[in-house]
Length: 207
Length: 84
Image 1 (spheres, chains in turn brown, orange):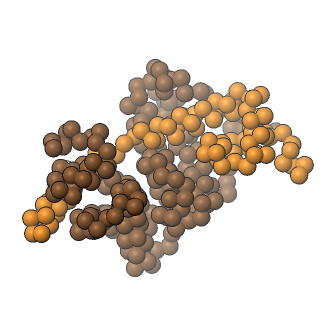
Image 2 (cartoon, one colour; image 1 turned 90 degrees about the horizontal axis):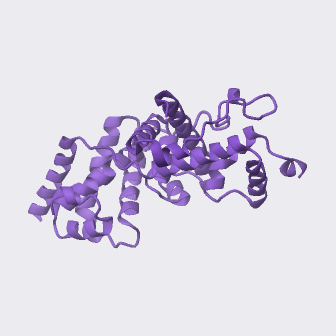
Image 3 (cartoon, rainbow over the protein chains, first blue to last red; image 1 turned 60 degrees about the vertical axis):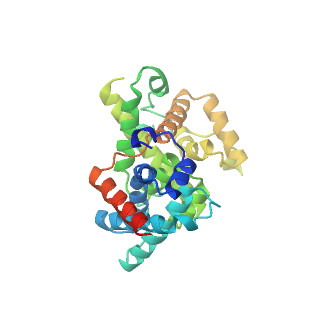
């Protein structure tokens, strides 16, 4: 298979080709998931370099273990579990503790946008219509991607796994060693931050 | 329970939006929020923005990978395949 044609092939079909030794199927899976592996790893370890080592080790484990993968879970879940387990071990070796959201109990929308009674004094400007119709879709996606990249931990890992990768709250909790309630709180704050950054971007571009 | 049944102000309503969209808000809270949303255009706009943000997050796709990273990993795959 030529790499360019694989973008819309689903994981299960790629997996089948991978088992047949097809390197372009492997390459496509790497393109699809390596950035997320780096984010999961970065949640547990102390540096980008260390996260890159964990992500590479994860792929080596996939190469060596793919024939033993029993497909009881999706490939994505299996892959992310391998990565999380390795990253957790690496993090323990580095004596690194799991990141805690420093603003967890603060408001998710700046207090100055409300009046004393708690009602909006600086209300949000609707942008849904713009996204659906007028706005260049690539621009909004780029704004969202940028916003997610600027999130600190643990918000970045939680938002990436839940909203970008579409995992369930329970799966995210398992991968990151958090309670589901905690994932929901972190997710809420992460999403609010992404919305805020996108809103700022939209204002700046006067859409 | 008086607090739970009192009307929401916007500042508190926005804190419920994420759980509301995920369907994990307890029924009583959900009703309070819906009641507020029915009379508040600004919070409805906030909800729509949040919904659009989440939808866009699911569409951003993977970042471009530096070609040396990709090639390095595919090389590892090729090596292992050819040795086994």
